[in-house]
Length: 456
Ligand code: GLN
Image (cartoon, rainbow, N blue to C red):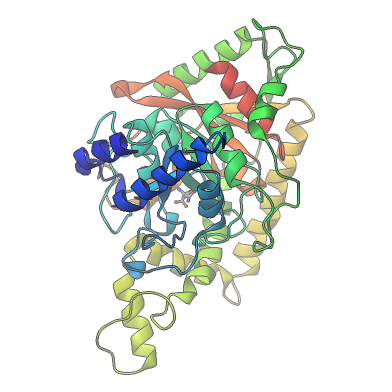
């Protein structure tokens, strides 16, 4: 803990941390030492981590990367935060992210960009960009993130780290500031699948305070990861595993460096005993319009609570109540958040609801059904995480559509609620990391982690 606090203090330009809690971490590390001395052998005991600043914490303010919540102090800890603390993990602070987790490059944070440690002129991915940058720069062995449409997998891919978004409902959303409630899922970003398994075991599990929490007994993902290996030989740990390659995940426009790195990783999976089969996810392209209708619709509803009355920034001067709402929201929200509130309000409004929102919901179901058709032919699905390596900060200018299109390979699993991972697959253009995406069926996290672990 002390060593990493020193490294973090020496790396302020990375923009990974929004707040560091040196005193709290030091006290927690001493408490962990005492637990260890008393014979406690929890695997995460004394392990330094930090949280994406979308999880509310009692020890530090929570901003969600927004001026709207600057200085907001939660009276309670998010379930994920509380569970990791009780497992003995030490929180070193709060990590930068896109405002309300809306973005793919961490460029939408009200508190400045985070930088990619492999090339500080490039984005670390988003929205969990601070988490990925901190792990990649070895400021932390692991961090929490959230993934609504790719925000764990894509930054993991851009920074050469490993991240898993579990099945929707595996981690509690209690105390996770809501973006799109039917999609939001927490998960870890770490240095290996094994570390992800240890974190996920501690942070997941049924929570009666989240109505969409999956009602299952506590899971030991590390044991599941290892037991998936039983019966297989050491040389061919993936013998019998069928990995589906959706042809839509390898389109003509895929960057050749990404294609080459992913195909090298697939060849390795084959060498480890897996069989590659061709499958199809015919509505892959439609997942972009479907997601960018459903996610803003839910966001417009979730963000209506930030009106300057009970939550969020309040304008200093205003004429009446309506003027107070308008000025508070105009000052508090950044441009991307405003764009999504407007899109969301539009697609939910009378006369447009049927044409946009309802259609998107129907397509969402068909996208989920397409996956089930694939899973009759294969056990896991593989492909790229993102169509390119990390772009340069500012390169996309004012064109939000560019960032939306880059989400094409992560959105389908999000819409279906399926678990997905990013595993390092080597390097592409400019020496930047490339991630391999693995997608499993519902609650197949053990199998996903097993395949990722074998590759590492
Ligand atoms: N890039 C996607 C978006 O901007 C996904 C973000 C996320 O998963 N939080 O909405």
